[in-house]
Image 1 (cartoon, rainbow, N blue to C red):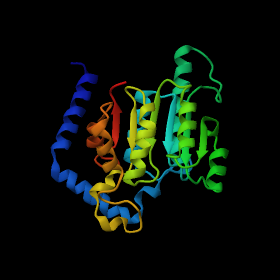
Image 2: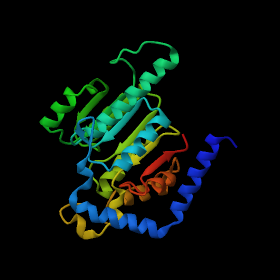
Image 3: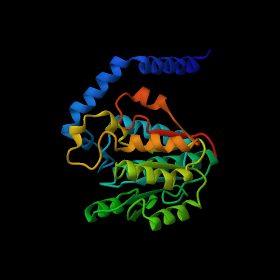
Image 4: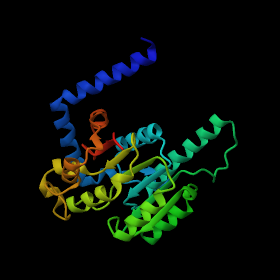
Length: 260
């Protein structure tokens, strides 16, 4: 076994040990509960824009995008735009790498790869900041409910031009809404790519943490994922991702597409 293979094997074994350590899992969950009142995920920016995500999930998304190499990323939930900017930056890197491999010179504003963001309310100051960003040329936005028929139809129409699609769901976190999003957009996900469902962690947290929200234990993205997977065999939960992250807002939320 060469050194590279040996390293990869050691990582796999480490992840397996982590997954078996229930005490460590409980400690991590308690930590996530303890930092939640401080809005820990609000502390970070990506290339200047608030991303409202924990760093570990940001790393996971970077790994997924590099592995999958999508030409379209669909994201529900825009907020300040940090996630759109991160996705756009990764797609720009992939464009650059493709150009290097082909021995061509890349026009910074060329390349088919794009990010499509959906939000029921794209606030003016956020839209202005996103559109002024150096990576804005790779970003499209649609204002409207992600489960509105006309929005779903528009997204599907735009998706026809792309071959490899990645979907991220991070808007309204109620069971009904997320299940509707899964039913609307999971069919667009390419084999080998992912549908990433965020804030599934809500199911594992105390109910009193969500007294001001319409979601909580029993009514959240994880319950929607469970319901969705009962009748859809195209996806499997990639447990290795959450096991290696430990700190994640998306346990059981990294869904890998394994069938056409």
